Length: 310
Image (cartoon, rainbow, N blue to C red; front, side, top):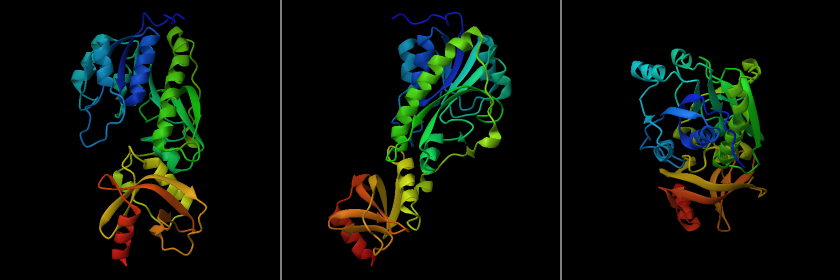
């Protein structure tokens, strides 16, 4: 089937990173939009790069790519002004774009956000949604404004968060939802018939970024909350962690269990050669894979360490 060619006369400047950036750039190209410039980030050597590369995709398609430290530079403004794009798009780009830059888009500037706005505005929305035990999230295409994730909504696509889904698994669903949202929204954007829905911030929420230290487990919490933390930051994110006798243990894989742990000490425990994480409500996580210094910990080694703690 031939793809629509409705976007052949439209030019875009795209700010993009991560797998969502890759899929959405591919979607713009499939709709026939000319991408004159892609602005992206330098990969952080301290970050686990598990996602697709915007730079590599642009190399394949011969799209000019730059990686400025900030989108607020006069040089970038001049470069985008010279292009005079019809559209500016932001797909998982990590900085807010200044109002003056957004104003250069003759037909609008739009962002693809990883939540069902107005819920979970701000940073790492997938991780926050999993942490809070949400049963669904999604992708929202919206008009960019000076406030983060505050502009009118073009379209949304919801995805389920299953009880055992990790943030990584949800992000995979979200990448597809982002592509679908953009694909089905582009015809109306390009022919000028797109309608904005209200993004009522009073009905939503805003969250900031998360640090690895935020993954520290408080075993006094109920098991469901501890499990949600594990799911929200499980590898390839830094992981939920706990400390025993000066050693840091990271939970790589776990499940909630019906095991009665009410008589066990809170924290890590070994029963019948099985590792449990005992929580404040007497319930436990069955820890299927536990890491120390990036390597799997055996039940025997953990038992030895726990004995040394006594």
